[in-house]
Amino acid sequence: MAAADELKTVRDFVRYAVSRFSAADLAFGHGTTNALDEAAFMVLEALHLPVDDLTPWLDARLTGEERARIAGLIERRCESREPAAYLLGKTYIRGVPFRSDRRAIVPRSFIGELMASELFGGAGFSLIEDPDAIGRVLDLCTGSGCLAILAAMTFPDAQVEAVDISPEALSLAAENVAMHEMGERVSLIEGDLFAPLTGRLYDLVITNPPYVDAQAMAELPAEYRHEPSLAFAGGPDGLDIVRRILKEAPAYLSPRGGLICEIGTGKEILEAEYPTLPFLWLDTEDSEGEVFWLSARDLGVGKDLRVISRMPR
Image (tube, rainbow, N blue to C red; front, side):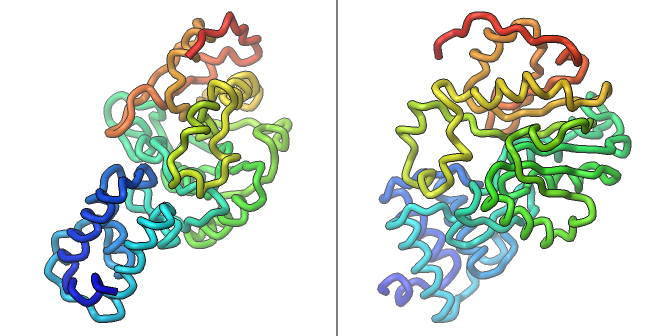
């Protein structure tokens, strides 16, 4: 392979990868948002180096075996359009590693960034004033188990239950739970949303459910088509499962509890359908109006949520 013969350093391979990725018009969004970040992640992870800082390694010269491996990964990324996390078998959320393969969508969520922020136990305004007081957490649609594990790290005294309808996803989640030695605190449950949880109450419900609408499903870039469609498809406007969660969540929240949910681009639809719900929209570095928070009080535990006429997208 010509690239493996001609390129010598980390800098060479990152520059080459950026050029190849740009020429191939790849789609990003599986942990990186641009060709440079993707190239840096792939090269560093392939070399088993820390992925958080490229600078110390730029002039490191690679062995022939390393050059051949990285050149092959770059070509495969361009030709197959598989997500980099699948090619390397790993990705990171806020520096925390997770195994990744086709059994579940690539671990990623704005909620992961939010849980690491001041909103969960910070000195100023905080949704959760005392993380130590959170006793039970539920992660719905857990997929790879990444958010359940991050929740266990964020809330040190909490027991976390993680539900998914896919046994394949749960098998990957089990590997991630074991890798992080969270088996005593994170329980994995197969089922459809709240169905297997009758009678249980939680101080916090976290969910990154399927929320891609039918039109967007038909137009998904090739990278996303390598992932399980079950984890994406949210019905005609993307919010079928979100509506179910809003309807059922009050029965599973403790009086002091709350719900944090990622929904993609459905903010206007939800606000029109549920005008009495005081959605608190939580923005991140790369998102605006894609994650909401509702407390148990906001959800009117024990009351009926009445849906008014649906607004078209």
